[in-house]
Length: 109
Image 1 (tube, rainbow, N blue to C red):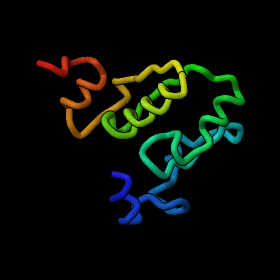
Image 2 (image 1 turned 180 degrees about the vertical axis):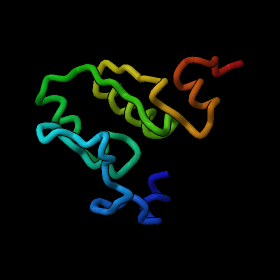
Image 3 (image 1 turned 30 degrees about the horizontal axis):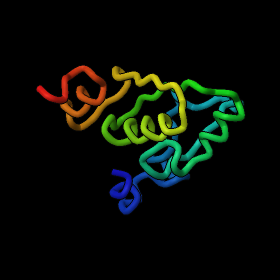
Image 4 (image 1 turned 90 degrees about the vertical axis):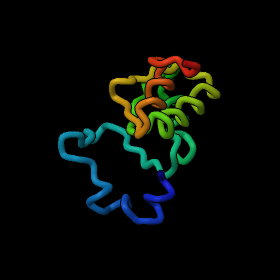
């Protein structure tokens, strides 16, 4: 997904496609990270920021349950964070993958 976005120059910093919508604009005191790959930790200083603030429990939600959410959950688990995934605020192209990864459908049925 990110490879296609990158090669198509669809979400490039400083362009309208990458702008944060007005309703979600961060406050001047809020930290904004630019994520350039699938997982939230791999190309950002998120771990450093969370550690500096003493955060040990993170809440995750996102557009791609089987991509962004799963990658971030796996990295966070390896870093010993307590994790909560908000399935109602997540989605996936595959409804079945979304259900399985959120524990709402048995993977073996």
